Length: 182
Image 1 (cartoon, rainbow, N blue to C red):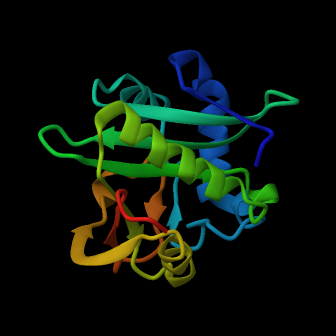
Image 2: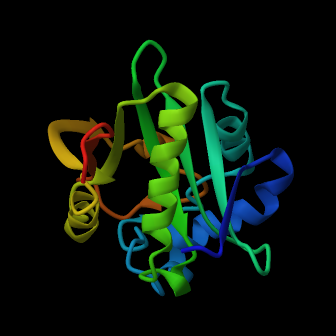
């Protein structure tokens, strides 16, 4: 997508970012897209303090993708450098639900991968996906991400203003070799 502009988020962006993230992950608005967790978790996904912590993290960046013509935030993601490694974590990935499927996610992911390679010399990117999100895991697989066989617990105790709708949630860990050619 050539009409995207990218930049790191600041605290001033939180009032626009937080609703975008919630729309992409939770509630009825999320159901307009295909990447949501609305049937698995009923909470706000992240609060102001949690988003500020990610934006302010010394080893991390929340990247905003905006429509160049309107300035509207249409996607974001977090990249977090894991000190003493050449691995970065990719998360908090949100694309405006009503425009999912148009290539924005691919463009944001490609930008994030290049960003971590240039900023931290990363050679690997990892992420976590709820295990039952097979179509999402397959989408990441088409972008070079592979299951590691590692399982991480779901943070039930960290839900924001809500609850999980299932008690069998956990994360599949995926990783990509950023040095491999696709």
